[in-house]
Length: 159
Image (cartoon, rainbow, N blue to C red; front, side):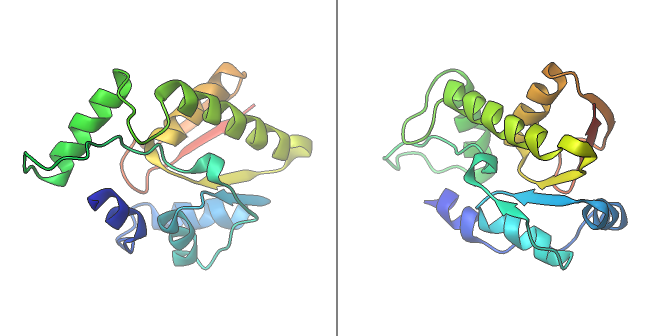
């Protein structure tokens, strides 16, 4: 599947906000990332290694069909399958409700690790990051800064 190929592909090294991301990683007491190759490789671009690597932070996978009747570009399939996933289609992957529960567990881990004033930085993935941010905001965190939802974007939250 093209999704599997994407998950094991090399990352693009054109990093927006490179200086800021380097500083965030450099200032972090604890660095977290998912188990996905692109998350670990992203840290390596900055000569950093994760304090903890955990699948809780993995990106939410896309559902897929087992047939190949229609040929579309991957970015079109991505949109179609993500919409279907939000509408409840979760064949071969975790459901939306299970992903939200995983985000709650990931949020608890972030909060626990940040106790005693520790600075925690997560090198994560788009949709899972948004689910975690939603949980952090519900836990009385404030969003101090956000650069959007594109690759290499970041958000800074504090309690």
